[in-house]
Length: 578
Ligand SMILES: Nc1ncnc2c1ncn2[C@@H]1O[C@H](COP(=O)(O)OP(=O)(O)OP(=O)(O)O)[C@@H](O)[C@H]1O
Image 1 (spheres, protein in one colour):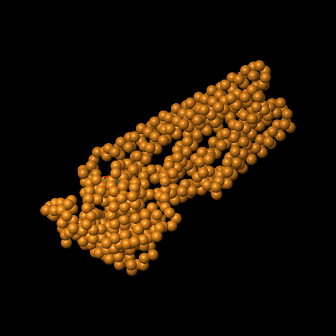
Image 2 (cartoon, helix red, strand yellow; image 1 turned 180 degrees about the horizontal axis):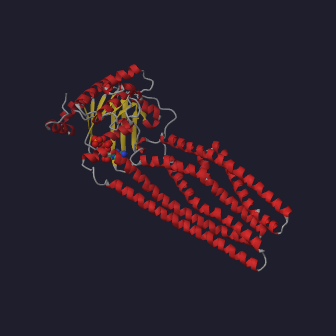
Image 3 (cartoon, protein in one colour; image 1 turned 135 degrees about the vertical axis):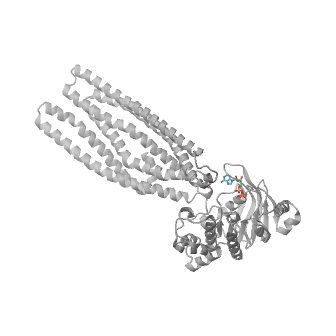
Protein backbone atom coordinates (compact mmCIF):
# COMPACT_ATOMS: atom_id res chain seq x y z
CA UNK A 1 0.00 0.00 0.00
CA UNK A 2 2.79 2.40 0.95
CA UNK A 3 4.48 1.66 -2.39
CA UNK A 4 1.18 2.41 -4.16
CA UNK A 5 0.82 5.70 -2.31
CA UNK A 6 4.39 6.71 -3.16
CA UNK A 7 3.73 5.87 -6.82
CA UNK A 8 0.63 8.06 -6.90
CA UNK A 9 2.28 10.93 -5.01
CA UNK A 10 5.21 11.06 -7.42
CA UNK A 11 8.81 12.03 -6.52
CA UNK A 12 8.00 15.68 -5.75
CA UNK A 13 5.49 14.82 -2.98
CA UNK A 14 7.12 11.73 -1.50
CA UNK A 15 9.30 13.61 1.01
CA UNK A 16 6.41 14.75 3.19
CA UNK A 17 4.87 11.26 3.28
CA UNK A 18 8.23 9.81 4.23
CA UNK A 19 8.37 12.26 7.16
CA UNK A 20 4.86 11.13 8.13
CA UNK A 21 6.02 7.50 8.15
CA UNK A 22 9.03 8.31 10.34
CA UNK A 23 6.88 10.19 12.89
CA UNK A 24 4.24 7.42 12.84
CA UNK A 25 6.91 4.77 13.56
CA UNK A 26 8.39 6.91 16.36
CA UNK A 27 4.89 7.37 17.81
CA UNK A 28 4.39 3.60 17.88
CA UNK A 29 7.83 2.89 19.37
CA UNK A 30 7.36 5.50 22.11
CA UNK A 31 3.92 4.14 22.93
CA UNK A 32 5.33 0.62 23.25
CA UNK A 33 8.26 1.83 25.31
CA UNK A 34 6.05 3.86 27.65
CA UNK A 35 3.94 0.78 28.34
CA UNK A 36 6.98 -1.50 28.70
CA UNK A 37 8.51 0.84 31.26
CA UNK A 38 5.50 0.09 33.43
CA UNK A 39 7.11 -3.27 34.34
CA UNK A 40 10.30 -1.92 36.01
CA UNK A 41 8.24 0.93 37.50
CA UNK A 42 5.83 -1.51 39.17
CA UNK A 43 8.72 -3.74 40.27
CA UNK A 44 10.49 -0.75 41.85
CA UNK A 45 7.23 0.29 43.54
CA UNK A 46 6.72 -3.13 45.11
CA UNK A 47 10.37 -3.37 46.14
CA UNK A 48 9.94 0.13 47.60
CA UNK A 49 13.06 1.28 45.74
CA UNK A 50 11.89 4.89 45.52
CA UNK A 51 14.97 6.16 43.62
CA UNK A 52 14.46 3.65 40.81
CA UNK A 53 10.72 4.23 40.92
CA UNK A 54 11.10 7.97 40.29
CA UNK A 55 13.69 7.35 37.51
CA UNK A 56 11.43 4.88 35.71
CA UNK A 57 8.47 7.16 36.19
CA UNK A 58 10.43 10.06 34.66
CA UNK A 59 11.50 7.85 31.73
CA UNK A 60 7.84 6.94 31.16
CA UNK A 61 6.89 10.61 31.18
CA UNK A 62 9.62 11.42 28.62
CA UNK A 63 8.33 8.62 26.37
CA UNK A 64 4.77 9.90 26.74
CA UNK A 65 5.81 13.45 25.82
CA UNK A 66 7.83 12.31 22.77
CA UNK A 67 4.92 10.06 21.77
CA UNK A 68 2.48 13.02 21.95
CA UNK A 69 4.78 15.23 19.85
CA UNK A 70 5.25 12.44 17.28
CA UNK A 71 1.49 11.87 17.22
CA UNK A 72 0.83 15.54 16.51
CA UNK A 73 3.50 15.78 13.80
CA UNK A 74 2.50 12.56 12.04
CA UNK A 75 -1.15 13.71 12.06
CA UNK A 76 -0.22 17.03 10.41
CA UNK A 77 2.12 15.44 7.84
CA UNK A 78 -0.37 12.63 7.15
CA UNK A 79 -3.23 15.06 6.62
CA UNK A 80 -1.19 17.31 4.33
CA UNK A 81 -0.05 14.29 2.32
CA UNK A 82 -3.61 12.94 2.09
CA UNK A 83 -4.84 16.25 0.64
CA UNK A 84 -1.96 16.24 -1.87
CA UNK A 85 -2.83 12.63 -2.66
CA UNK A 86 -6.47 13.51 -3.36
CA UNK A 87 -5.48 16.41 -5.59
CA UNK A 88 -2.88 14.30 -7.42
CA UNK A 89 -5.38 11.49 -8.02
CA UNK A 90 -7.97 13.91 -9.45
CA UNK A 91 -5.35 15.64 -11.62
CA UNK A 92 -3.95 12.36 -12.93
CA UNK A 93 -7.40 11.00 -13.69
CA UNK A 94 -8.40 14.27 -15.38
CA UNK A 95 -5.14 14.49 -17.35
CA UNK A 96 -5.51 10.90 -18.47
CA UNK A 97 -9.19 11.07 -19.41
CA UNK A 98 -8.53 13.88 -21.89
CA UNK A 99 -5.96 11.70 -23.68
CA UNK A 100 -8.29 8.72 -24.15
CA UNK A 101 -9.95 7.99 -27.48
CA UNK A 102 -13.44 9.52 -27.53
CA UNK A 103 -14.86 6.10 -28.33
CA UNK A 104 -13.82 4.93 -24.82
CA UNK A 105 -16.49 7.14 -23.25
CA UNK A 106 -19.29 4.73 -24.06
CA UNK A 107 -22.04 3.07 -22.09
CA UNK A 108 -21.21 2.22 -18.50
CA UNK A 109 -18.17 4.48 -18.33
CA UNK A 110 -20.05 7.23 -16.53
CA UNK A 111 -20.74 4.97 -13.55
CA UNK A 112 -17.19 3.58 -13.55
CA UNK A 113 -15.47 6.96 -13.75
CA UNK A 114 -17.77 8.62 -11.20
CA UNK A 115 -17.29 5.76 -8.69
CA UNK A 116 -13.50 5.88 -9.01
CA UNK A 117 -13.25 9.68 -9.03
CA UNK A 118 -15.54 10.20 -6.03
CA UNK A 119 -15.80 7.17 -3.71
CA UNK A 120 -12.48 5.68 -4.85
CA UNK A 121 -10.30 8.73 -4.34
CA UNK A 122 -11.94 9.55 -1.00
CA UNK A 123 -11.38 5.99 0.21
CA UNK A 124 -7.67 6.09 -0.79
CA UNK A 125 -7.25 9.50 0.84
CA UNK A 126 -9.00 8.25 3.99
CA UNK A 127 -6.72 5.22 4.12
CA UNK A 128 -3.62 7.40 3.78
CA UNK A 129 -4.79 9.93 6.39
CA UNK A 130 -6.55 7.79 8.99
CA UNK A 131 -5.64 4.12 8.58
CA UNK A 132 -1.90 4.19 8.05
CA UNK A 133 -1.27 5.62 11.55
CA UNK A 134 -3.00 2.84 13.55
CA UNK A 135 -1.42 0.26 11.23
CA UNK A 136 2.13 1.59 11.42
CA UNK A 137 1.99 2.34 15.13
CA UNK A 138 0.10 -0.95 15.55
CA UNK A 139 3.20 -2.74 14.20
CA UNK A 140 5.89 -0.53 15.77
CA UNK A 141 4.34 -0.58 19.24
CA UNK A 142 3.98 -4.43 19.57
CA UNK A 143 7.45 -4.85 18.01
CA UNK A 144 8.91 -2.62 20.75
CA UNK A 145 6.95 -4.54 23.39
CA UNK A 146 8.29 -7.89 22.10
CA UNK A 147 11.89 -6.64 22.30
CA UNK A 148 11.31 -5.38 25.85
CA UNK A 149 9.55 -8.61 26.79
CA UNK A 150 12.57 -10.64 25.58
CA UNK A 151 14.64 -8.44 27.84
CA UNK A 152 12.31 -8.87 30.87
CA UNK A 153 11.63 -12.61 30.41
CA UNK A 154 12.98 -14.41 27.36
CA UNK A 155 10.44 -17.27 27.60
CA UNK A 156 7.39 -15.00 27.48
CA UNK A 157 9.18 -12.88 24.87
CA UNK A 158 9.75 -15.98 22.73
CA UNK A 159 6.06 -16.89 23.08
CA UNK A 160 5.15 -13.49 21.68
CA UNK A 161 7.66 -13.87 18.80
CA UNK A 162 6.13 -17.27 17.93
CA UNK A 163 2.63 -15.76 18.03
CA UNK A 164 3.48 -13.10 15.41
CA UNK A 165 3.13 -15.36 12.32
CA UNK A 166 -0.14 -16.81 13.72
CA UNK A 167 -1.57 -13.34 14.23
CA UNK A 168 -0.23 -12.22 10.84
CA UNK A 169 -1.99 -15.08 9.02
CA UNK A 170 -5.27 -14.36 10.88
CA UNK A 171 -5.07 -10.62 10.11
CA UNK A 172 -4.33 -11.38 6.48
CA UNK A 173 -7.27 -13.76 6.30
CA UNK A 174 -9.59 -11.06 7.75
CA UNK A 175 -8.27 -8.48 5.28
CA UNK A 176 -8.64 -10.86 2.32
CA UNK A 177 -12.24 -11.63 3.27
CA UNK A 178 -13.08 -7.92 3.47
CA UNK A 179 -11.34 -7.17 0.16
CA UNK A 180 -13.07 -10.06 -1.64
CA UNK A 181 -16.49 -8.87 -0.51
CA UNK A 182 -15.60 -5.29 -1.42
CA UNK A 183 -14.84 -6.26 -5.03
CA UNK A 184 -18.33 -7.77 -5.42
CA UNK A 185 -19.96 -4.84 -3.65
CA UNK A 186 -18.10 -2.41 -5.92
CA UNK A 187 -19.23 -4.13 -9.11
CA UNK A 188 -22.82 -4.09 -7.81
CA UNK A 189 -22.51 -0.38 -6.88
CA UNK A 190 -21.25 0.55 -10.37
CA UNK A 191 -24.10 -1.37 -11.96
CA UNK A 192 -26.79 0.21 -9.79
CA UNK A 193 -25.18 3.65 -10.30
CA UNK A 194 -25.50 3.19 -14.06
CA UNK A 195 -29.07 1.94 -13.76
CA UNK A 196 -30.08 4.94 -11.60
CA UNK A 197 -28.61 7.31 -14.20
CA UNK A 198 -30.39 5.41 -16.96
CA UNK A 199 -33.67 5.46 -15.00
CA UNK A 200 -33.44 9.22 -14.51
CA UNK A 201 -32.51 9.80 -18.15
CA UNK A 202 -35.16 7.59 -19.70
CA UNK A 203 -38.10 8.91 -17.65
CA UNK A 204 -39.76 10.44 -20.76
CA UNK A 205 -39.61 7.08 -22.58
CA UNK A 206 -40.85 5.12 -19.56
CA UNK A 207 -43.75 7.51 -19.04
CA UNK A 208 -44.60 7.63 -22.74
CA UNK A 209 -45.00 3.87 -22.63
CA UNK A 210 -47.11 3.96 -19.49
CA UNK A 211 -44.37 2.72 -17.14
CA UNK A 212 -45.32 5.18 -14.40
CA UNK A 213 -46.29 2.51 -11.88
CA UNK A 214 -44.60 -0.63 -10.75
CA UNK A 215 -40.93 -1.34 -10.89
CA UNK A 216 -38.31 -0.72 -13.53
CA UNK A 217 -36.79 -4.20 -13.58
CA UNK A 218 -33.18 -3.35 -14.52
CA UNK A 219 -32.94 -0.82 -11.68
CA UNK A 220 -34.81 -3.07 -9.28
CA UNK A 221 -32.53 -6.00 -10.11
CA UNK A 222 -29.41 -3.82 -9.73
CA UNK A 223 -30.57 -2.52 -6.32
CA UNK A 224 -31.44 -6.06 -5.20
CA UNK A 225 -28.00 -7.26 -6.36
CA UNK A 226 -26.40 -4.39 -4.43
CA UNK A 227 -28.33 -5.36 -1.28
CA UNK A 228 -27.26 -8.98 -1.68
CA UNK A 229 -23.64 -7.93 -2.21
CA UNK A 230 -23.88 -5.65 0.85
CA UNK A 231 -25.25 -8.49 2.99
CA UNK A 232 -22.57 -10.93 1.86
CA UNK A 233 -19.95 -8.22 2.44
CA UNK A 234 -21.13 -8.01 6.05
CA UNK A 235 -20.84 -11.80 6.44
CA UNK A 236 -17.33 -11.85 4.98
CA UNK A 237 -16.25 -9.06 7.34
CA UNK A 238 -17.79 -10.82 10.37
CA UNK A 239 -16.13 -14.16 9.51
CA UNK A 240 -12.74 -12.45 9.07
CA UNK A 241 -13.19 -10.54 12.31
CA UNK A 242 -14.19 -13.69 14.27
CA UNK A 243 -11.15 -15.64 13.02
CA UNK A 244 -8.89 -12.73 13.92
CA UNK A 245 -10.47 -12.45 17.37
CA UNK A 246 -10.04 -16.19 18.04
CA UNK A 247 -6.35 -16.00 17.09
CA UNK A 248 -5.80 -13.06 19.47
CA UNK A 249 -7.59 -14.82 22.33
CA UNK A 250 -5.59 -17.99 21.69
CA UNK A 251 -2.28 -16.10 21.90
CA UNK A 252 -3.32 -14.26 25.06
CA UNK A 253 -4.51 -17.46 26.74
CA UNK A 254 -1.29 -19.26 25.79
CA UNK A 255 0.82 -16.48 27.33
CA UNK A 256 -1.30 -16.51 30.54
CA UNK A 257 -0.90 -20.29 30.86
CA UNK A 258 2.84 -20.09 30.23
CA UNK A 259 3.15 -17.22 32.74
CA UNK A 260 1.15 -19.17 35.33
CA UNK A 261 3.49 -22.18 34.94
CA UNK A 262 6.51 -19.95 35.32
CA UNK A 263 5.01 -18.30 38.40
CA UNK A 264 4.12 -21.69 39.94
CA UNK A 265 7.69 -22.87 39.32
CA UNK A 266 8.92 -19.74 41.07
CA UNK A 267 10.63 -18.33 37.98
CA UNK A 268 8.60 -15.12 38.04
CA UNK A 269 7.17 -13.32 41.03
CA UNK A 270 3.39 -12.68 40.86
CA UNK A 271 3.76 -8.87 40.65
CA UNK A 272 6.09 -9.11 37.64
CA UNK A 273 3.75 -11.66 36.05
CA UNK A 274 0.77 -9.32 36.34
CA UNK A 275 2.82 -6.47 34.85
CA UNK A 276 4.01 -8.72 31.99
CA UNK A 277 0.45 -9.86 31.29
CA UNK A 278 -0.56 -6.19 31.13
CA UNK A 279 2.22 -5.73 28.61
CA UNK A 280 0.93 -8.73 26.63
CA UNK A 281 -2.52 -7.15 26.54
CA UNK A 282 -1.00 -3.99 25.06
CA UNK A 283 0.85 -6.19 22.55
CA UNK A 284 -2.40 -7.87 21.46
CA UNK A 285 -4.70 -4.84 21.28
CA UNK A 286 -3.07 -2.94 18.36
CA UNK A 287 -2.62 -6.19 16.43
CA UNK A 288 -6.37 -6.79 16.72
CA UNK A 289 -6.99 -3.35 15.29
CA UNK A 290 -4.62 -4.09 12.40
CA UNK A 291 -6.89 -7.00 11.44
CA UNK A 292 -9.82 -4.59 11.20
CA UNK A 293 -7.98 -1.73 9.49
CA UNK A 294 -6.21 -4.19 7.20
CA UNK A 295 -9.56 -4.88 5.52
CA UNK A 296 -10.11 -1.17 4.90
CA UNK A 297 -6.56 -0.90 3.53
CA UNK A 298 -7.27 -3.78 1.14
CA UNK A 299 -10.43 -1.96 0.04
CA UNK A 300 -8.38 1.17 -0.61
CA UNK A 301 -5.91 -0.95 -2.58
CA UNK A 302 -8.83 -2.25 -4.64
CA UNK A 303 -9.76 1.36 -5.38
CA UNK A 304 -6.17 2.07 -6.43
CA UNK A 305 -6.30 -0.95 -8.73
CA UNK A 306 -9.56 0.28 -10.28
CA UNK A 307 -8.01 3.69 -10.76
CA UNK A 308 -4.95 2.06 -12.32
CA UNK A 309 -7.22 0.18 -14.72
CA UNK A 310 -8.44 3.53 -16.03
CA UNK A 311 -4.96 5.05 -15.98
CA UNK A 312 -3.63 2.06 -17.91
CA UNK A 313 -6.10 2.44 -20.78
CA UNK A 314 -3.92 3.22 -23.75
CA UNK A 315 -4.11 6.92 -24.53
CA UNK A 316 -4.71 7.97 -28.09
CA UNK A 317 -1.29 7.89 -29.70
CA UNK A 318 -0.67 11.35 -31.08
CA UNK A 319 2.30 12.85 -32.89
CA UNK A 320 4.05 15.87 -31.34
CA UNK A 321 3.46 17.87 -34.50
CA UNK A 322 0.95 17.33 -37.28
CA UNK A 323 1.78 16.32 -40.83
CA UNK A 324 1.57 18.99 -43.54
CA UNK A 325 -1.82 19.26 -45.27
CA UNK A 326 -1.67 18.40 -48.96
CA UNK A 327 -3.93 18.15 -52.01
CA UNK A 328 -7.45 19.11 -52.84
CA UNK A 329 -9.13 16.38 -50.81
CA UNK A 330 -10.75 17.43 -47.57
CA UNK A 331 -11.54 13.88 -46.42
CA UNK A 332 -10.33 10.62 -47.88
CA UNK A 333 -11.11 7.01 -46.95
CA UNK A 334 -8.66 4.51 -48.36
CA UNK A 335 -9.65 0.81 -48.09
CA UNK A 336 -10.98 1.26 -44.54
CA UNK A 337 -12.17 -1.71 -42.49
CA UNK A 338 -13.60 -1.14 -39.05
CA UNK A 339 -15.54 -2.93 -36.33
CA UNK A 340 -16.32 -1.93 -32.73
CA UNK A 341 -14.37 -3.85 -30.10
CA UNK A 342 -17.47 -5.70 -28.86
CA UNK A 343 -19.13 -6.37 -32.21
CA UNK A 344 -18.63 -7.61 -35.76
CA UNK A 345 -17.24 -5.73 -38.73
CA UNK A 346 -19.18 -2.53 -39.46
CA UNK A 347 -17.35 -0.92 -42.39
CA UNK A 348 -15.83 -2.97 -45.24
CA UNK A 349 -13.21 -1.77 -47.65
CA UNK A 350 -14.53 1.81 -47.73
CA UNK A 351 -12.78 4.17 -50.17
CA UNK A 352 -14.01 7.61 -51.19
CA UNK A 353 -12.78 11.19 -51.62
CA UNK A 354 -14.54 14.34 -50.43
CA UNK A 355 -13.16 17.29 -52.47
CA UNK A 356 -12.70 20.64 -50.72
CA UNK A 357 -15.73 22.97 -50.60
CA UNK A 358 -18.04 20.21 -51.83
CA UNK A 359 -21.24 18.76 -50.42
CA UNK A 360 -21.19 15.00 -49.93
CA UNK A 361 -24.31 13.16 -48.85
CA UNK A 362 -23.98 9.86 -47.01
CA UNK A 363 -27.05 7.65 -47.34
CA UNK A 364 -27.86 4.06 -46.53
CA UNK A 365 -30.11 1.86 -44.42
CA UNK A 366 -30.20 2.17 -40.64
CA UNK A 367 -27.15 0.51 -39.09
CA UNK A 368 -25.15 0.57 -42.32
CA UNK A 369 -22.39 2.61 -40.65
CA UNK A 370 -23.02 6.26 -41.61
CA UNK A 371 -22.43 7.62 -38.12
CA UNK A 372 -19.41 5.33 -37.80
CA UNK A 373 -17.86 6.99 -40.89
CA UNK A 374 -18.11 10.42 -39.18
CA UNK A 375 -16.69 8.98 -35.94
CA UNK A 376 -13.64 7.66 -37.79
CA UNK A 377 -13.06 11.08 -39.38
CA UNK A 378 -13.18 12.66 -35.89
CA UNK A 379 -10.93 9.84 -34.61
CA UNK A 380 -13.30 8.65 -31.90
CA UNK A 381 -11.85 5.27 -32.93
CA UNK A 382 -8.91 4.15 -35.06
CA UNK A 383 -9.49 2.06 -38.19
CA UNK A 384 -8.70 -1.68 -38.18
CA UNK A 385 -7.04 -1.36 -41.58
CA UNK A 386 -6.77 1.26 -44.31
CA UNK A 387 -6.35 5.01 -43.80
CA UNK A 388 -8.63 7.96 -43.04
CA UNK A 389 -7.09 11.24 -44.21
CA UNK A 390 -8.14 14.79 -43.38
CA UNK A 391 -6.53 17.48 -45.52
CA UNK A 392 -4.45 14.74 -47.15
CA UNK A 393 -2.92 13.65 -43.80
CA UNK A 394 -3.60 10.37 -41.98
CA UNK A 395 -5.70 11.38 -38.94
CA UNK A 396 -3.22 9.39 -36.80
CA UNK A 397 -0.50 11.83 -37.91
CA UNK A 398 -2.48 14.84 -36.70
CA UNK A 399 -2.54 16.11 -33.14
CA UNK A 400 -6.04 16.04 -31.62
CA UNK A 401 -5.99 19.83 -31.44
CA UNK A 402 -5.13 20.16 -35.15
CA UNK A 403 -7.66 17.54 -36.20
CA UNK A 404 -10.45 19.09 -34.17
CA UNK A 405 -9.56 22.59 -35.37
CA UNK A 406 -10.43 21.39 -38.87
CA UNK A 407 -13.77 19.84 -37.93
CA UNK A 408 -17.16 21.02 -36.77
CA UNK A 409 -19.45 18.29 -35.52
CA UNK A 410 -23.22 18.72 -35.55
CA UNK A 411 -24.22 15.31 -34.23
CA UNK A 412 -27.38 13.87 -32.72
CA UNK A 413 -26.28 14.11 -29.11
CA UNK A 414 -25.96 17.87 -28.66
CA UNK A 415 -24.57 18.72 -25.25
CA UNK A 416 -24.99 22.19 -23.81
CA UNK A 417 -23.17 23.26 -20.65
CA UNK A 418 -25.01 24.79 -17.73
CA UNK A 419 -23.89 28.25 -18.70
CA UNK A 420 -25.44 31.20 -20.49
CA UNK A 421 -26.69 30.86 -24.04
CA UNK A 422 -24.02 33.19 -25.35
CA UNK A 423 -21.25 31.24 -23.59
CA UNK A 424 -22.53 28.00 -25.11
CA UNK A 425 -22.31 29.41 -28.63
CA UNK A 426 -18.96 31.08 -27.97
CA UNK A 427 -17.55 27.62 -27.23
CA UNK A 428 -17.30 27.35 -31.05
CA UNK A 429 -14.60 30.05 -31.09
CA UNK A 430 -13.84 31.57 -27.68
CA UNK A 431 -12.11 34.64 -29.16
CA UNK A 432 -15.17 35.58 -31.31
CA UNK A 433 -16.62 39.07 -30.78
CA UNK A 434 -20.20 39.55 -29.57
CA UNK A 435 -21.10 40.78 -33.07
CA UNK A 436 -19.85 37.55 -34.62
CA UNK A 437 -21.83 35.50 -32.09
CA UNK A 438 -25.01 37.51 -32.80
CA UNK A 439 -24.43 37.08 -36.52
CA UNK A 440 -24.28 33.28 -36.46
CA UNK A 441 -27.10 33.18 -33.94
CA UNK A 442 -29.30 35.04 -36.43
CA UNK A 443 -28.48 32.62 -39.25
CA UNK A 444 -29.07 29.53 -37.08
CA UNK A 445 -32.31 30.96 -35.65
CA UNK A 446 -31.01 31.30 -32.10
CA UNK A 447 -31.83 35.02 -32.07
CA UNK A 448 -35.53 34.10 -32.05
CA UNK A 449 -35.02 31.88 -29.03
CA UNK A 450 -33.25 34.72 -27.22
CA UNK A 451 -36.29 36.97 -27.59
CA UNK A 452 -38.43 34.40 -25.82
CA UNK A 453 -36.04 33.76 -22.94
CA UNK A 454 -36.50 35.70 -19.67
CA UNK A 455 -32.90 36.88 -19.40
CA UNK A 456 -32.12 36.92 -23.12
CA UNK A 457 -28.53 36.06 -23.98
CA UNK A 458 -27.65 35.68 -20.31
CA UNK A 459 -30.20 32.93 -19.65
CA UNK A 460 -28.60 29.80 -18.30
CA UNK A 461 -29.54 26.77 -20.36
CA UNK A 462 -29.38 24.17 -17.54
CA UNK A 463 -27.21 21.06 -17.36
CA UNK A 464 -27.22 19.41 -20.79
CA UNK A 465 -29.36 22.29 -22.10
CA UNK A 466 -32.51 21.09 -20.32
CA UNK A 467 -33.99 24.62 -20.33
CA UNK A 468 -34.20 24.51 -24.15
CA UNK A 469 -36.26 22.36 -26.49
CA UNK A 470 -34.58 19.69 -28.65
CA UNK A 471 -34.86 21.87 -31.76
CA UNK A 472 -33.51 24.90 -29.87
CA UNK A 473 -30.53 22.91 -28.61
CA UNK A 474 -29.74 21.84 -32.15
CA UNK A 475 -29.87 25.41 -33.40
CA UNK A 476 -27.34 26.37 -30.71
CA UNK A 477 -25.16 23.49 -31.88
CA UNK A 478 -25.38 24.70 -35.50
CA UNK A 479 -24.57 28.26 -34.40
CA UNK A 480 -21.45 26.88 -32.67
CA UNK A 481 -20.41 25.19 -35.92
CA UNK A 482 -21.03 28.40 -37.91
CA UNK A 483 -18.96 30.38 -35.45
CA UNK A 484 -16.10 27.90 -35.51
CA UNK A 485 -15.78 28.28 -39.30
CA UNK A 486 -13.96 24.95 -39.48
CA UNK A 487 -12.93 23.88 -42.99
CA UNK A 488 -14.90 20.61 -42.68
CA UNK A 489 -18.40 20.21 -41.24
CA UNK A 490 -19.80 16.79 -40.33
CA UNK A 491 -23.55 17.06 -39.95
CA UNK A 492 -26.20 14.53 -39.11
CA UNK A 493 -29.42 15.77 -40.65
CA UNK A 494 -31.51 13.60 -38.34
CA UNK A 495 -30.47 16.18 -35.81
CA UNK A 496 -32.06 18.92 -37.83
CA UNK A 497 -35.18 17.40 -39.33
CA UNK A 498 -37.54 18.15 -36.49
CA UNK A 499 -40.03 20.74 -37.67
CA UNK A 500 -40.48 23.08 -40.64
CA UNK A 501 -39.27 26.12 -38.68
CA UNK A 502 -36.11 24.34 -37.64
CA UNK A 503 -35.60 22.95 -41.11
CA UNK A 504 -35.65 26.44 -42.64
CA UNK A 505 -32.91 27.55 -40.26
CA UNK A 506 -30.85 24.46 -40.97
CA UNK A 507 -31.18 25.04 -44.71
CA UNK A 508 -29.94 28.59 -44.30
CA UNK A 509 -27.10 27.49 -42.05
CA UNK A 510 -26.08 24.77 -44.48
CA UNK A 511 -25.96 27.24 -47.38
CA UNK A 512 -23.81 29.51 -45.23
CA UNK A 513 -21.50 26.63 -44.25
CA UNK A 514 -21.32 25.34 -47.84
CA UNK A 515 -20.02 28.72 -49.05
CA UNK A 516 -16.90 28.34 -46.89
CA UNK A 517 -16.55 24.72 -45.83
CA UNK A 518 -16.60 21.15 -47.01
CA UNK A 519 -19.80 19.43 -45.92
CA UNK A 520 -20.22 15.73 -45.24
CA UNK A 521 -23.85 15.20 -44.37
CA UNK A 522 -25.66 12.08 -43.17
CA UNK A 523 -28.56 13.01 -45.39
CA UNK A 524 -32.20 12.47 -44.51
CA UNK A 525 -33.75 15.16 -46.74
CA UNK A 526 -34.05 14.63 -50.45
CA UNK A 527 -33.29 18.31 -51.03
CA UNK A 528 -29.82 17.71 -49.60
CA UNK A 529 -29.34 14.54 -51.63
CA UNK A 530 -30.38 16.21 -54.87
CA UNK A 531 -28.12 19.20 -54.23
CA UNK A 532 -25.09 17.08 -53.26
CA UNK A 533 -21.99 17.07 -55.43
CA UNK A 534 -21.74 13.37 -54.73
CA UNK A 535 -23.82 10.79 -52.93
CA UNK A 536 -22.17 7.85 -51.21
CA UNK A 537 -24.55 4.94 -50.76
CA UNK A 538 -23.69 2.43 -48.04
CA UNK A 539 -25.14 -1.06 -48.16
CA UNK A 540 -26.45 -3.27 -45.37
CA UNK A 541 -23.05 -4.98 -45.05
CA UNK A 542 -21.18 -1.69 -44.48
CA UNK A 543 -19.59 -1.48 -47.93
CA UNK A 544 -20.06 1.26 -50.51
CA UNK A 545 -22.57 0.12 -53.09
CA UNK A 546 -22.68 3.25 -55.27
CA UNK A 547 -21.13 6.70 -55.60
CA UNK A 548 -22.30 9.51 -57.91
CA UNK A 549 -24.60 12.48 -58.36
CA UNK A 550 -28.35 12.18 -57.99
CA UNK A 551 -28.90 12.16 -61.78
CA UNK A 552 -26.10 9.70 -62.47
CA UNK A 553 -27.30 7.31 -59.77
CA UNK A 554 -30.91 7.50 -60.96
CA UNK A 555 -29.76 6.78 -64.48
CA UNK A 556 -27.68 3.82 -63.28
CA UNK A 557 -30.86 2.21 -61.98
CA UNK A 558 -29.13 0.57 -59.00
CA UNK A 559 -29.80 0.57 -55.25
CA UNK A 560 -30.08 4.35 -55.04
CA UNK A 561 -32.65 4.49 -57.87
CA UNK A 562 -34.69 1.79 -56.15
CA UNK A 563 -34.40 3.63 -52.84
CA UNK A 564 -35.45 6.93 -54.51
CA UNK A 565 -38.41 5.45 -56.33
CA UNK A 566 -39.62 3.70 -53.22
CA UNK A 567 -39.40 6.91 -51.16
CA UNK A 568 -40.93 8.97 -53.94
CA UNK A 569 -43.93 6.72 -54.16
CA UNK A 570 -44.56 6.68 -50.42
CA UNK A 571 -47.41 9.07 -49.78
CA UNK A 572 -46.85 11.64 -47.08
CA UNK A 573 -43.08 11.10 -47.17
CA UNK A 574 -41.61 14.36 -46.07
CA UNK A 575 -38.38 14.17 -48.03
CA UNK A 576 -39.42 15.80 -51.26
CA UNK A 577 -36.87 17.49 -53.47
CA UNK A 578 -37.31 21.22 -53.13
N1 LIG B 1 -20.36 2.29 -29.76
C1 LIG B 1 -20.72 1.19 -30.42
N2 LIG B 1 -20.32 -0.01 -29.99
C2 LIG B 1 -20.66 -1.15 -30.65
N3 LIG B 1 -21.39 -1.17 -31.80
C3 LIG B 1 -21.83 0.00 -32.28
C4 LIG B 1 -21.51 1.25 -31.62
N4 LIG B 1 -22.08 2.25 -32.35
C5 LIG B 1 -22.71 1.66 -33.40
N5 LIG B 1 -22.56 0.32 -33.36
C6 LIG B 1 -23.05 -0.65 -34.35
O1 LIG B 1 -22.43 -0.35 -35.60
C7 LIG B 1 -23.35 -0.47 -36.67
C8 LIG B 1 -23.39 0.84 -37.47
O2 LIG B 1 -23.92 1.85 -36.63
P1 LIG B 1 -24.05 3.36 -37.13
O3 LIG B 1 -24.61 4.15 -35.98
O4 LIG B 1 -22.79 3.81 -37.72
O5 LIG B 1 -25.16 3.19 -38.27
P2 LIG B 1 -25.99 4.32 -39.00
O6 LIG B 1 -25.95 3.96 -40.44
O7 LIG B 1 -25.51 5.68 -38.62
O8 LIG B 1 -27.44 4.06 -38.40
P3 LIG B 1 -28.67 5.10 -38.25
O9 LIG B 1 -29.04 5.59 -39.60
O10 LIG B 1 -29.75 4.22 -37.65
O11 LIG B 1 -28.22 6.16 -37.30
C9 LIG B 1 -24.69 -0.85 -36.05
O12 LIG B 1 -24.84 -2.24 -36.19
C10 LIG B 1 -24.54 -0.48 -34.59
O13 LIG B 1 -25.27 -1.36 -33.78
